[in-house]
Length: 102
Figure 1 (cartoon, rainbow, N blue to C red):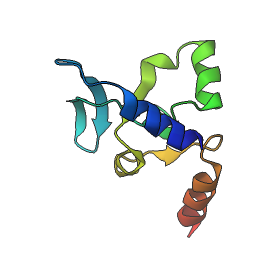
Figure 2 (figure 1 turned 90 degrees about the vertical axis):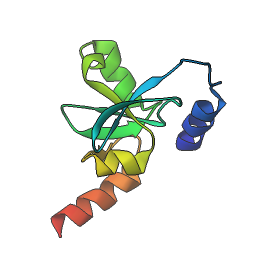
Figure 3 (figure 1 turned 180 degrees about the vertical axis):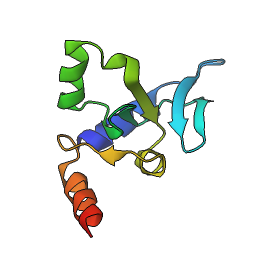
């Protein structure tokens, strides 16, 4: 449900002339006329929902924001080499971990 809410929120953002968001993709950073639907942490290579409680706690402690990145979608985050967050994407994390052990 949180994933859908994040997508709905991102989709509801009105495109304003000249407004762009910096997103990360497999070929590096780029400006997009639409905001990202998932966020990540550059150093830990983890991605999750925009309302992830773990990311919010880390942001509140400070320091996390400087390594925060955003992706157009989950497929782009995975293609960029990021793994799912244990806290907000637990099922996807367990699937990632099981595939990694094989």
